[in-house]
Image 1 (cartoon, one colour):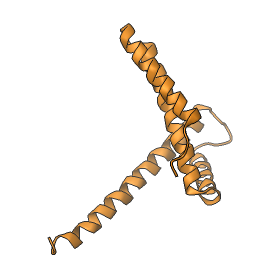
Image 2 (cartoon, rainbow, N blue to C red):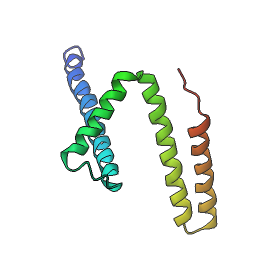
Image 3 (cartoon, rainbow, N blue to C red):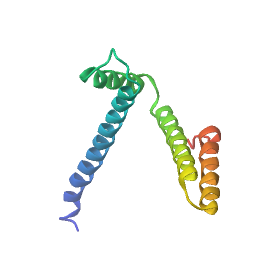
Image 4 (spheres, one colour):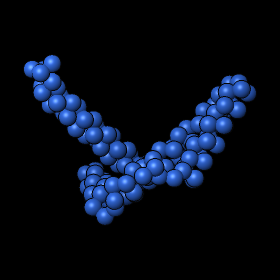
Length: 118
């Protein structure tokens, strides 16, 4: 273990960094996709990426990390509430619709009422 343990730190850190890079890439693509979906004409091609990057940098520079985490967590809960509504509307059985509806209510409650842990 004494010989192997120091070698494990580098792959662990590398995986964590690449995981965050993957998430940032996916979020950037989602932001650009949203701009494309609303068909905002002044922004075409690479300008959309520039806008998304500038907004992300501005948020990171002006808000506390804990605030960004709280807002992102609420946004995820709201997104999952919408996904539950979609599942509820498209599910076949009454029992599934009730279950998905209950999950949607829980996610909406988390979105609106949750308190930060820290």
